[in-house]
Length: 337
Image 1 (cartoon, rainbow, N blue to C red):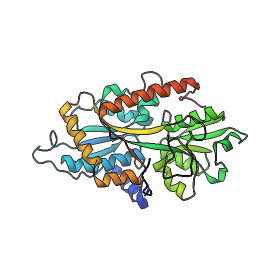
Image 2: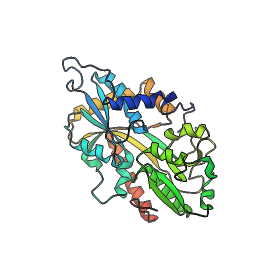
Image 3: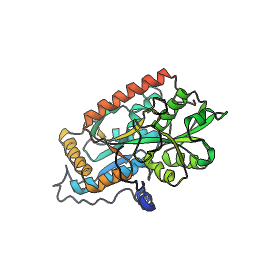
Image 4: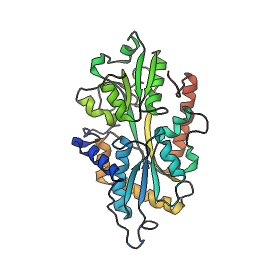
């Protein structure tokens, strides 16, 4: 991540989170577009964008930022609806059963495609082959954080703690879990996973000392880091991020743990090609808007606006790569380390 602008938080001055929660309570975004006599999109029905996480989290806010732009472009209301649970698998199941007409979409987290299958029994995780992929969206880096009162500042400190470490994750089968399992295994640190349902409760647990450390998406932790309420230990990015220039990567610290969260827009299998192409063009317009580009900068997101087949190939490759390292280190993502 190379942008030099200073972060303005996921919820600038607290208003973004409040807005997201209020919108969720009333069913989603207030669509700005209005189709006239079916002239816009393939019909004038609203578009529903499913999110498999709670309101106010990173995936939710990304969906809402895009929904506003797509609504304006297509001329139909775009509503975000939250279906939290099972790292997004519940939302994915709903999407699979939706009418393939372009009016039901999902912001799909990559971890559900290339990490969750390693944590559950074969066939239990959704298969990306069962969906159409409209477009990639962005990538987000993870950072390992702790409360200042813990006294930990380096991986070596954790290794020398003289006791087992507890680490919070944003859920079973997530990049948060995999990044820490790999790090602690390679560092020879005895550690126990404590799963939570998303970044917000994980962050709260670290701040409150309920767990020693947690791997959290950078955009969700940066405010507390800059306020001195969290101590960053390492990031799991491939290169040192500009927002944390003094924080080494796990790779710099000597551990092979590059893990990122990525996101894409999915549609039900069988959605007509012309509808997919219309949606692709609309999302490209959204990506190019000044408001959305500022949103990416404010929230430390790396654009990954590639086409659907590139997403499919990249995520399939990630699954193979992560399966290999999980087997190499005998990691059980479905249980405690």
